[in-house]
Length: 169
Image (tube, rainbow, N blue to C red; front, side):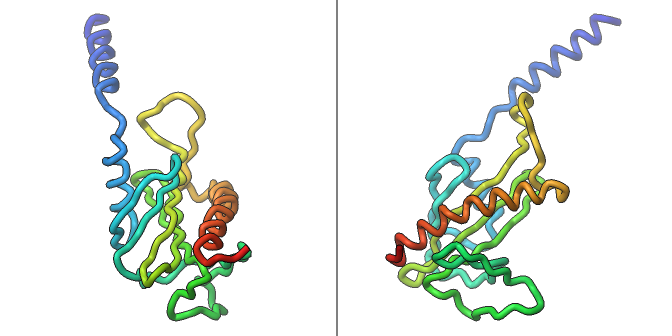
């Protein structure tokens, strides 16, 4: 009886060790599937931060916008005074929650030469391929305050990008 359990345990360990982490190309392709509009080119700038380009102007309305001073305006409210088209000096931000992949995508985009470009921030605190360490599920609604703090901190990076493109500050 003990041999059966030992054999079962060993086969489970072998099966777990065979699972390989995703390659960079597979990881990027997985992210592109979660973006709700077509992306032409995407490349990793830093871990968890990607720069993307679109061949055309993305018409998707934002969840909120960020100006070149870092002031955020929420769009999804009743008393919203919104634009029909994205101004050139405003970042439009969308938040995409991917429960199956246990990640939150923050998509900051702006207009340059009639095309959309921007940063994709990947907030992922849970990954089954790495069982050790502290994990938290960023898609859990009880942890949204922590995710909101992260989003507030990454706003500065997008404001720097906007100001370098628009030429202010």
